[in-house]
Length: 202
Image (cartoon, rainbow, N blue to C red; front, side):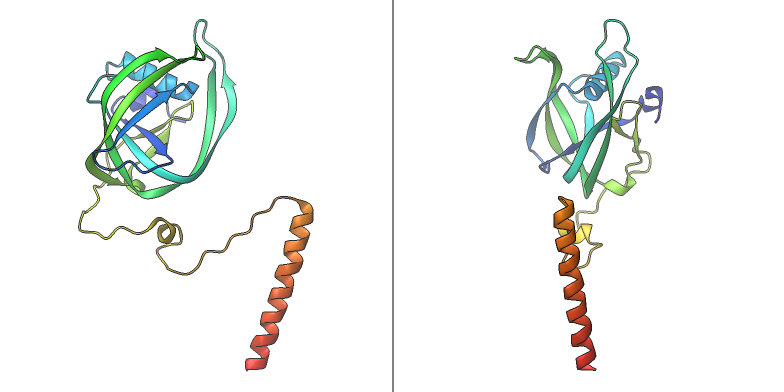
């Protein structure tokens, strides 16, 4: 984990379930502890204002898990540390904050409310130099980020996940021991039948 002081020149990174397109306006209501801490620190650094840039990356598949609480500072929210696993799109988009404010939801929880708009600037995700702070929030140092070439043909998400090939993707979902045994037996039979067919064709 990287101390926040090293992120003062970095951009916040958000994973999204829906891709943010150029010109799209997206409203964010952030109440999770790591996001509150992220924007509290940006506010302390004088960066929480319209014009703030952040990076959005489409994550079609992913999960977020709490790891632990850090010691609580008196008068502050509990600092919940999270860990995120996600399959990220190869292209990310820079978004610009149009409005930002602190607010409270109907549940009484404090939150940061933002309106962000997708810009025309896209970056190669693999070049973002992604790092996480001690709370699990993501940042891009952007020093080595490379803008995508509009002339490059975009790779569909499924092909990108499969290394750019067009071969079919097969997966097995394991949901319990009884199902596992059945799947293993079925796969074993399929393999045996394939071996028999291959031998007959020779």
